Image 1: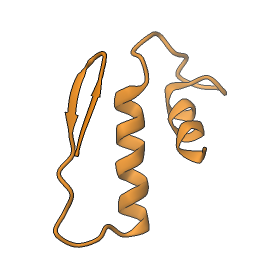
Image 2: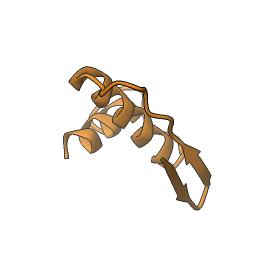
Image 3: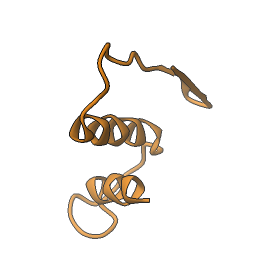
Length: 59
């Protein structure tokens, strides 16, 4: 699977077996992290980069 955006192309190679729910959650978290625009973010609080990724995955 390839995802193209303004930053380039992200290629995802799926495993030969179906992913577990935990593996699927981690995959989407990584993809979301790749797609979040790189800018200064606080280390803690509701707008931290970690919370942004969690909020995006929760949707």
